[in-house]
Each structure stands twice: as C-alpha cells, then as structure tokens.
Length: 130
Image 1 (tube, rainbow, N blue to C red):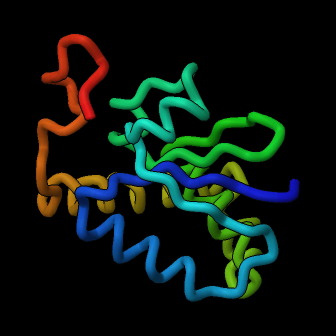
Image 2: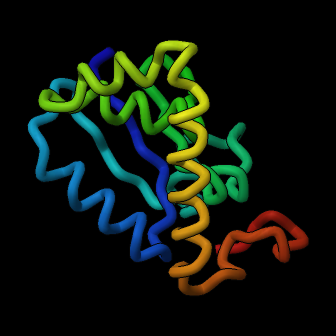
C-alpha cells in the first residue's frame, strides 16, 4: 500500500478537526484528504455513493479497496506511526464492539456540528448535488 485517500465531510467542524490532527501525525502510509461528495471525489470514485461517504468516513487504498466506518478509522490509525499498534488492537474481532461504539459516538458529534446539512445529502433527488 503506497497511499490512502480519506473521503471526509468538509462541512463538519469535528471532521476537519480530526483531519487536522491526522495530518500533524507522522504517517507511515501517506494520507490524502478529499472532500466527500465533491466533484473531484465523484470523478475519482464514480462507483462510491456520495451520500454514504458523507455518512461514514471512507478510505480508499491505491488498489481500490474501500473501508468505511470503523474499518476506515482503523486503517487511518494503522497509517500513523504512533497509532499503528492501537489500530492492530482495534482490528481484532474482540475489539470490534469498541471500535463501532467509538465511531457511533463520533457520528453523533458530526451530526450535531455539521454545517450545510443538505449538501450532498439524502434530500438530493438527482444525486448530482454539490
């Protein structure tokens, strides 16, 4: 794996805060952040549902594998030098409930602080919003 692309909700202050924290970390695998649902994200990943990538952080590796929700967060942590061991622990099946609970809590925060809620959202009838 040479590079990971993280599709994140640019209209969410919590998501931007997480992005800013990640980019300050030492990366073992380079992470590129791309606004979910953006024209560039749609061009690069036409098979991904923009609304789904806004609902859950999504990571795409350079081989085309897609990770969403808890798995995406584990992959992001795995790419970071100081957090790879945590990622390996969270990847264990016994840790799956903890990872899901952490992502669910983050999702609730994201929904509470998100601006521009209709942007790329489910209210977009033609799926071409944004």
